[in-house]
Length: 180
Image 1 (tube, rainbow, N blue to C red):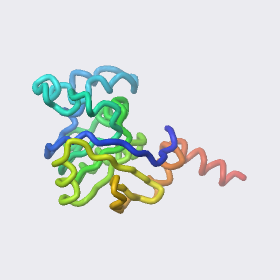
Image 2: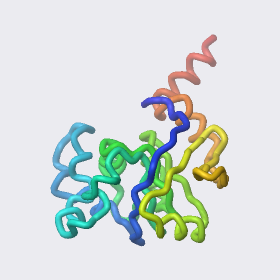
Image 3: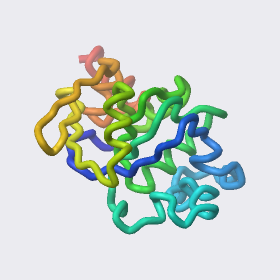
Image 4: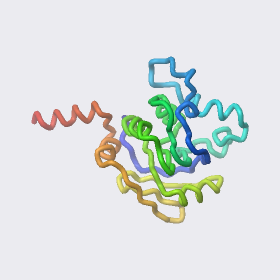
């Protein structure tokens, strides 16, 4: 897992409540055993049904932040959803709330999920593109005009993301330290 560093990016607005894992990565793509090659299937059904879907629009290419409503990542537990988001180039998802299982899968795989208040999210979703700086070390999201929004994050998961440690790497690091 790579170390998480602060970054600035424009957002992709996804004004949808209850984005479930089947929307994120359709079940027919879960037959493979490797962790790669899922990004191309991100929101496949929504993209096919709606030519105006944000991920079909050129202005959202190269965005690293997905912006959505409440209960993002609900539905069945599948790490493939996290992998698809990451492999499509996203480093963070900002939403009003997340499914607990999805939140844990994301943290274990290096995808930062940030929960911010509904008024902030609603304001950003009204704009076509919002440029934000995400800083996990400081636990802030900063707008282009300098407005800062603090967010809470589990200290253990924060440490792991900043150091680029998955659970096994963390255990190996802790074991080395104890053996010294």
